[in-house]
Image (cartoon, rainbow, N blue to C red; front, side, top):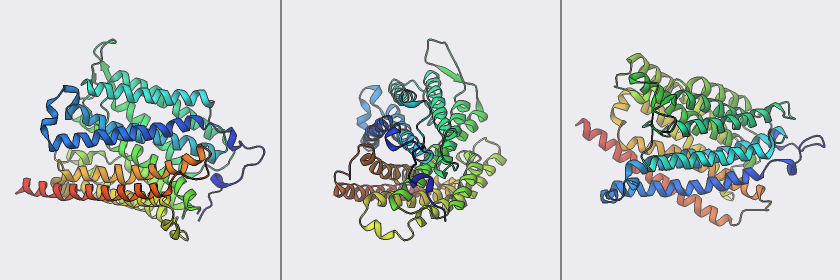
Length: 427
């Protein structure tokens, strides 16, 4: 076992005190997280109705399924999830390093407003039909360049704070946050290399073509899941679960093994999205093999998160915030079991293009990402706004049970309908 000394130890006079931390911008990120979460969930509900009632697509062009679907996915992943990651990473790095953010409040404020501008530019482009056509990388070249600038500044702030830390030890959550920031920068730049038709136009053409374009796209697409929606949120888990449970991480050594195994394995798994295509067969098998190998570190991380509650399981009866965090870890384990299973070619032949994939994505996005975010937000809000407690623990209880029931019903329905779809197509 290891202690959470970097994050719970009392500061001395030479350390940055809590009043010195750059927290105002983090409050803005928390508010943005909640706002964009509502936008993303409303958009998802509406496009679900469009699938059930096709006549809802007969309105203006900007309101049809094809335009609104990327609004929903980007709002949930990059607006809701992205703002949550920015809020928590900038909060955690200050506490675990006992140091103010590098660059101070003005630089962090630029990242906040720059990131919100990216979200608005991307969403407005989707509604007008201005996209690159790449899933999860739909924004056109001018939006991509702006995001790259904002992201590099974010990296400088985070890395600079680590370099100026007043703790000799870098807490493991910061390892996951830094890996997520660096890898997303690399994925974003490489996948979005494009030549604009003109400097004053919105259209561009990717430098990648054919099979190479598909391979680069799903190298990006899968690792956007692997590092944006997994590594980044594991950083949240490794800080907020021990803090809320008031227990040290069960095995610090296991957390380091978890980190390096994910870093090495995840980056190779993308080709499993392209089974039975013109992608070279050996590449498909490589992606499948590394995906199956991900079972081990993923479940190691899940066990580490759950076992952190050793001696504190009784708190689940009275602490709905901890319940959100723990159930998110359970959903993480479920999603990381299902993903490698669906990467196996024979299983993929049944599951691909069916609702099973939709259920899998939402068990991760809602069960893992949203739940761990809810838990982190409920932890952060009283501390950032200097309140003794949350407004209403009973409302948190209601939120937990309604969300849990809704997600379980949703993903179960998708699993059943998806497997039926696959079997009917094979009949």
